[in-house]
Every structure is written in C-alpha cells, then in structure tokens.
Length: 116
Image (cartoon, rainbow, N blue to C red; front, side, top):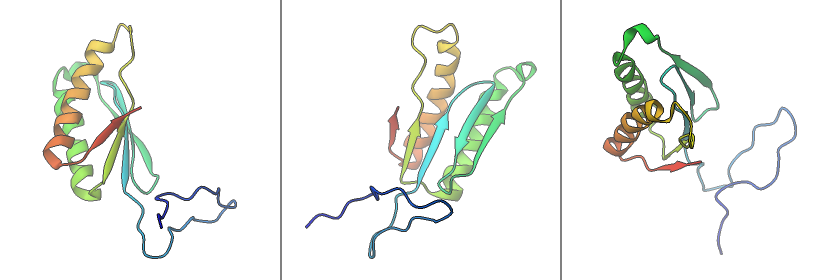
C-alpha cells in the first residue's frame, strides 16, 4: 500500500492540515532569486525579501548567500524550489549570478532543488 506524500484535499479555512499518522511533511524552502530583491518562503510559510542596494556592488551577492546559508542551517529543508531564470530578459545574466551562489549553497548543504 502506498501512502500519499501530500494531502490532496484543501483544508477548511482556518484549519491547519496535518500529515497522515506516521508520516512527516517535507520541509521546503522557496527562492525567488534577484540581485535587488530576493524572495524567500520558509518551510512554515513565512515569506520575506532580501533587499540590496546597487551601491554595494558585488557585495550584494555575499549578503544574499549568507542569508540563504543561515536559513538552510536554521530550517534544514528537505528540498528547495527555485524560480527559473527569465528567458531572453535583459537582466538574466545578472540574475544568473544569484542563481549560482544559491545553488552552490544548496549543493554544499546537501539540499536537492527543483527549478519551476
């Protein structure tokens, strides 16, 4: 018998869904990567942005990297979901730098990731 990993029913408003007995839900972190305002969704559903200033130059990359590293250490996610790079966009090259540091942190921490 297989047990589904996720509930397929939507919970009623105000109720917190619970996993089936004897199972645990995977901890997932979401990353919407950008050099100016990276969006983060933590496993508990909390969302926030990492805002950076152009005046800080490439130090923005280390600020984003350190924040992602801290969240991986604190929340120990089982999986990360990353928004894909924009195709044929003027800023795709700049955003790719952020993707590189984020993916390197996930790889170093042993956290698999998917691109959506």
